[in-house]
Image (cartoon, rainbow, N blue to C red):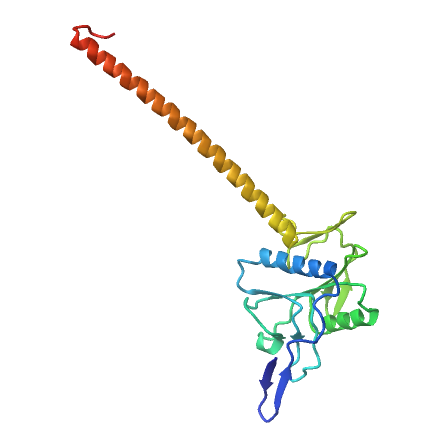
Amino acid sequence: MSIAERPGTQQIVYPESDGQPMADNTLQYEWITTIKGGLDGVFRDDPDVFIAGDLLWYPVEGEPTIRCAPDVLVAFGRPKGYRGSYLQWKEANVAPQVVFEVLSPGNRFYEMLRKFRFYEQYGVEEYYLFDPDRNELDGWRRAGDKLDEIPEMNGWISPRLGIRFELGASGLCIYGPNGQQFLTYEELTRDRDEATRQRDEVTRERDEVTRERDEVTRERDAVRARADQLAARLRELGVEPE
């Protein structure tokens, strides 16, 4: 847990866990980790983009009951690193600009409404809500002190993240600014193994070509050596080879 102390007051405890599971089922968990991992990849070279999953965010110092744990949050202007919670007043008072929630059958309407109002009140710029069971994606973008619904999410490009959302019959696909799709760990492992297999195949083919080339070179050198020996023998016999 995080403990903060203000002058003239008792220590205030900011718990680092709300006692709730990160996900209610495997599908929700897979999407949370896929989104978080995909964003890690997009911003891997930027030291000042902090990305976290299921991390308690405390926006108000001295108010440990005011908190929320987005499934994924992104804070621009904050350094990478490990945190037990996101204490906003210790983060240059930077609120996470983008948050994601992934629904599960256990989510309740009033719970999600409470989260929406929290994100709206405390400065989130973009909020994305995905229901993998229904393949439904909703999004909101800040306009003044409100979060306005994004009319069409299919093909939407996040102004902050630069990622693109595509909704099709096979489900949601998210693409990074470089056009690469966000993948599950299993898919990444499969692609890595396939890339390794192809690399090894190319290496084997290259080595085979090198062996064949070396064999041709050895045979050519042997023919030249025999020709030189024959020419030398002819000269010994007083015959000048042509």
